[in-house]
Length: 438
Ligand code: MEV
Image (cartoon, rainbow, N blue to C red; front, side, top):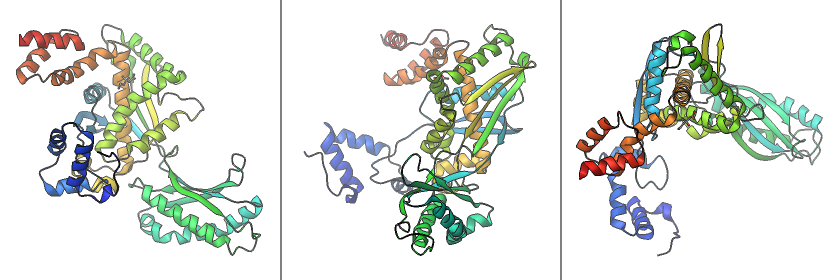
């Protein structure tokens, strides 16, 4: 059967499934059964999910877990996390509990500005272009009013538009570099609509601008798009306590523990190989909350990693110090998030997750997400610098291995008990299960 298809998007859902299972699977009925197992019985709910994207054939489940006991600026939260990695929620919960007894997390939103750019080509005199830009700037803002009106009523909107000369990098390349305040919306649609309007006004008005030569009148718009690099949409999260209050960890004095922890962070600050893994651990917490709250984790990932390289070398997003006997551990990250618009009003589980967080503003969500990242990083470094990561990881992985071998409830209970005092390895679990089954 041919593996190409014409007009696929126009087929019905069941026709699409038929084509897929018959084209790609040795057992089409089994494949169809698996796909249908994940459909929701509630047809309206299923349709809602079908319509999020094109060519939907089924739903892809991720577990939604919760990590309780997060004290953030004196308020208690239970944080929802959607993630497949076994140890993440347990680690977050453990870190939350640890810091609950030591004053909790302190956070501040440093800034909330978002950026968008119109990229264009102009072949002519820069001073004349500058003159045109300054003349037309009020009109750029004015003609975008139908888009910005409501946002302005709520206190947001366009903050500024600058003309940027990029001709040293590419001949004839300039930008309208615009900044925005989008309040509780992530703002992608708002920003992109504004930019496309700027581009239209900017191109159209050039045709009748007296200062331009015939050649200069032809401004070529290349594209208009928001930037996911948001170094001025920043949040900071911190934990701190007296070194003594860290208490003895796994037989190591609190001073030695704190010192080693700081060393581990210092290594991630200077060594990119380590920094990437260190930051991946931070993103374990961040992405899980971003997903649970219906935000765009790809945008956040791209922006965060760009920020981690802002000094020309990829480095740690978190930092730690011991000063006058006080241990402080903190991170500062860019996060462009929304608590209105997008999936937030559509996906029932996203709505539930936001309600669990007491319907946060975007600023509050930035703080909660940053804390989830810091907590995750704390838990990872705590394990790495004491017992090693595998002890906890393999304990959590035990259930995955047992499920892989289709262990029943009785086998699971017995082996979970047994591995409380024995080292989990893949082969040890397989052997124990085999013995149990003999
Ligand atoms: C695993 O998902 C994350 C860690 O590798 C993070 C780290 O090394 O800091 C444990």
